[in-house]
Length: 409
Image (cartoon, rainbow, N blue to C red; front, side, top):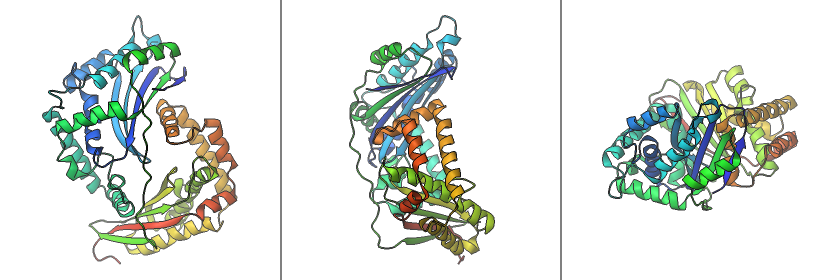
């Protein structure tokens, strides 16, 4: 297992983070999501949440966390702990105790007879069901997942990181234990440490307490549903403002010029308050209460998410498409390009200056070629207006998904 170390005295804490990467599979998403919560809350030595909290308090308020996300075409469990650096304490070895706790939760989980306890499983199921309900009640989130269901063939891409609600009901303690064994044995595992530490000591502690073998997992390509022309789907639902969600696909290759051009394109299109969507659709024409675009840069997916006036939703859709066509035709000011570059580079530098930002940027490099900070910034700076136009011309609108009240036109 490779150790990625950022040795820095910028922080008073040391962050130790493990990333477990597996192929995105609807058959295992719910089990892995439940697992991520169980290993955070208890272990064989600390069999309930309160005893775990008490132990963390003894570690000067250490923060133990775990969560699961979909990232590109992978399912990723993150397990981490933040502790105060020992140099700020007298005669303590909190760093070693942090590694010991990670060893405890990873290798001595709170199980019985080859299964996680059903009462704990039941609690986590209930909490995830609440998350599903929250998505339904949040029309912005609900509309986005309806868009994904309309765009992608693979059910894993259509659902949240915690899987499908119908599969969740069927998960047992044995299923979660099987997912745990599979994670330890088969996942691609990466360890990150951020803080003012001794590199040789980190290597020794990792070898002693986190002696994990890492595999290189094969990730399947993402498949869109085939359509000859953009599809528009209207769902009638009780809402005060229509929700318009749009999905575009672009031909992006990482880490070639198209990748950096795509990042710039998104910033110009709808990435910040200086973007075309914000200034024209929202501010000038008052068609949207809120609007922005976001991307999955490596897969070439771009999404527009907006809340618009019910009576003007058709005009809003047409205007969003018109703004995109402006980029395709090069009808945008050079200043937008310069502003986009400056904003993106500043955001990158700010991210690297935070432990979490460093970890996420380094981990993103495991999905393809490793691009250094300097090379990444150089790639952004090299993008020309012609490059932005070129990547825009590869873009196609795949789906428009609109939530609107009954009877609206």
